[in-house]
View (tube, one colour):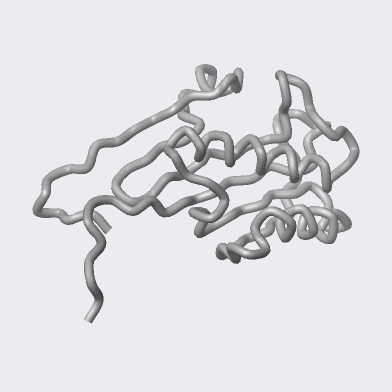
Amino acid sequence: MTDPAAGPAAVERIRSDSPWEDEIGFARAVAVGDRVLVAGTMPLAGGVVHGEGDPYLQTRTAFTNALAALERFGLGADSVIRTRMYITHARDVEDVGRAHREIFGSVRPVATLVVVSGFVDSRVLVEVEIEAFRPVGPAKESV
């Protein structure tokens, strides 16, 4: 956590090539203090839905895209402390879970998996969010 006595923390925002960032008015990722939050990320590659009809591949692509945003802050999968996965079909839980486990199995972030009615693009089966921890300032010794 940041020290409140140090004043307000700077907020850093990054953008991606998502067409919805300008249309809706959001950033791909925001860092403040020791947290980096990555917005809902779909399985788009080059503006095209990647892995159409394949929840496993869509999950891998969406997390790859979200992790690319983290990399811009110098962080990787090992910094992830929370994931959220939104899927359109309960039948896809196993495939989505397998992709998550392959990426984060050794990290073990807290995770939420929710079935939703749909996304902006009906070909999308999965959307993900991640939250990461980044150390700021000198490490404090615990007592």
